[in-house]
Image 1 (cartoon, rainbow, N blue to C red):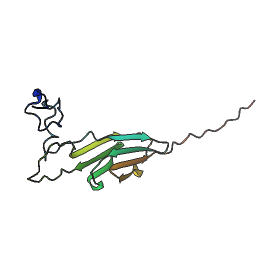
Image 2: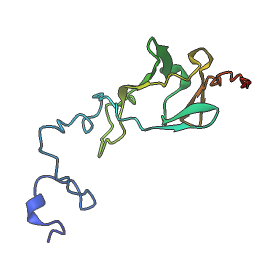
Image 3: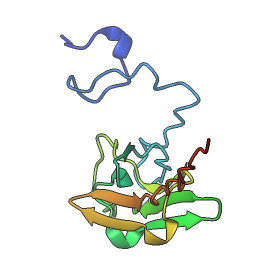
Length: 151
């Protein structure tokens, strides 16, 4: 007697494998389920917060070395964070049950506001989290000159 309902027949290897309702849709194309095939993970999650002193970007990049990441500021104040997560080597005797971690190239771009010092951008990588700090330029307050009123 099977513990898996018959509408799963031929699709699952064991009773612990959950049904994926999007499995046969064309937009899934199996890019993340085929071992050895790379897929872009352009949806890399990045937080952007503004403090009184700087704009701070934090990206979760687990398994990516700092040598595999590039942080650039292009003309027009465009911050670009890109890199490449290499595919895990596959042995001939390996049997994959599920591949969900993404691999391949990624790139995110952000238009920075006018009040930033693009020459002083700093980046640091710690425990798989990339932190990019873009200092703000000091907002110069206009000089106000008091005028004496005669009469």
